[in-house]
Image (tube, rainbow, N blue to C red):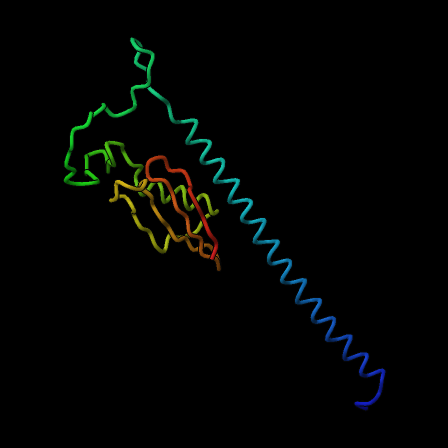
Length: 162
């Protein structure tokens, strides 16, 4: 093969262009696959959150016709909180509200990403200034998902794919 031969130079350029096109196509397919997977997960999150919303009910005081699920008014009295989270026989509570069990939250998170194993979990339930959350990292195949859940309702707040 002669390096100065125009036919061989065109063939080499054609091969290089073909390889570049193939790499771009693989990149686009990978991005599209990730996009579709995220849409599927978003759909599962939406279904989960709708199911949770439909399960929630507000108790009504028949005499007043008012919701009774609010804590009683404390007026302007200063109260001192000794513990943000109280342990009860039913589970943890936060501001007087029962948190969902972390094992139940873990099941929801795994179901949301389509299966896998929890490789990290964290309970962010000890601060009264922020809503309590559970955070999970779930390995499914060669991907790691990060799922943040509302510890009061079990709804998925956020997720990312690493």
